[in-house]
Amino acid sequence: MKPVAVTRAAEALSMLYLASERRHAFPLVVTDVHMPDMDGFGLAERIKESPQLAGATILMLTSGGQPGDAARCHELGVSAYLTKPVRPGELRAAVETALAGVWPRAKFHPHAVTAAPLGQPAGEVAHKGAVLRILLTEDHIVNQRVALHILESQGHSVVVANNGREALAAVAERTFDLVLMDVQMPEMDGLEATAAIRERERGTARRLPIIAMTAHARKEDRDRCLAAGMDDYISKPIRAAKLLELVEKLCGQPAGSLDPGDEI
Image (tube, rainbow, N blue to C red; front, side):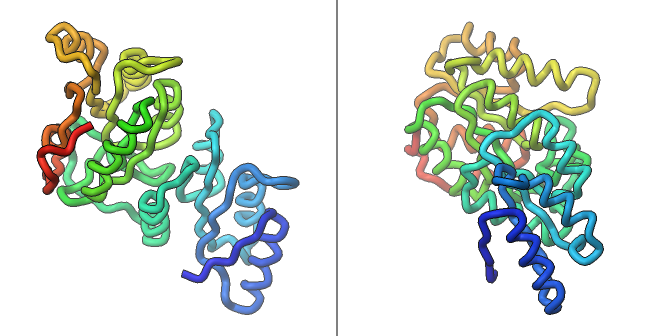
């Protein structure tokens, strides 16, 4: 790719019009939501309103999503909405998908939802070997890094939430194939967050698979997790082989190859 960087929406519009007049229109616009003078939604609206620019694909980046952002993205034709910091693999997957125009299709799985662009119906799970979009909800930085290593080494796209509140916001704005949910976290714990997710799903055909992660391995702890609406349970320290086994069980993903001794 040959990127051109600007710092304001007005500069972006000038560059887009100039490129169009020279018959070298930009096929992709990656814009931040929060910018001076005109925000990313304003820029997307201007692009949509202009017949000269309307063919550009738009990806939106934000440091903090707000209620209603997903609806605005859908209304303005924004192809993807990513929360910063954006990992290279996540950005690349979003770019490839947006420019391809479709997400990979696979057979229906009744207990999972597929990663899909904003506005596309969910209801299918990624086929074996495909990228899963996984929400990792964990407040411990070391645990985050090790879990990211295990999942990203299998090619999955991972978004990190530091507590239950962040997890709820992420699930409201995006579609995930799976959630790894730590049980003990500040602000909102995993049990509360899971109960809130299940309440949102009430009356729909959707059920987002959720795996509990906790340092407690007693039967009563497992029962509490299942009672809260979690689909399965893994105790810490988390071994890579066990984690990937659960991913395969819930999402139909092959376990791949990792050192069985890898653990959080």
